[in-house]
Length: 163
Length: 163
Figure (cartoon, rainbow over the protein chains, first blue to last red):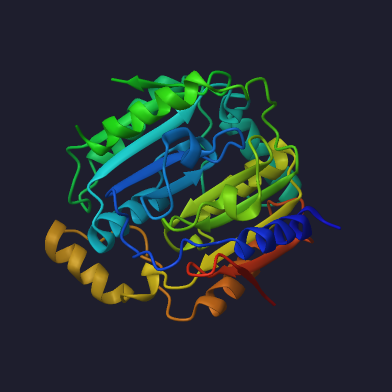
């Protein structure tokens, strides 16, 4: 039995007792959260979110890429969110390697270079600041006045704001 | 008090009773989940995931973009995941608009066209199939034999596999 099979079985139990249907698509709390894909960060529990309340965007690092700006633009213009929360975290895998070396590894292994930059970073707080700036500079967003950034401590569960 | 302030306050309560520290970075169940950002889908609860078990990637639609391939490549090569689960869902906002009209709206409003395609789709199952194909064709991934795709029903909580 694969892990995917186990997740499907867990979902059958979840669905059997599910009573949360009928919610509208636009998030009821009008907020979008952008976070790292890290397995130790359960965004819903860590922020007290319930079904239907917030968009949750996640990628490697929680960095603001074109795909994040695409998703945030749809979130604000089509689904009425107005606030944005960015979350990086301590002990991030993105701080354990170097972009140039990783691209060289990929080229050696796959015979081609990726179209994307890996996005590794050494300074988590500085990367949050760069992500905040990228969101605020996006011409397609309609709400950039309520954008805040945080670092999540994977050992304490606490958020610390980056200003 | 903004919604962001409320989330920060909720996190203070969460951290006060947090006892899950000390987990390693690589996901213990070696799986990465790619899902839509939709507010009605709490990936951890819907799949029975606990802290530290899986990478969770999310964007508008759950579509496989360059940023998703970047994140999956890092997930597999740097953090040892081997299985991939793709999740789209019923009643998706991405099925409510048209790419060309949305790009025209953005150009009219912001005075420039986005570098990204919005990624709207009319047929959810077909978009899952295209996402499966995009993952399987990615030269940078080391494990493409265990990639499966599903549609989550936001009203019943149940996953249905797309084959």
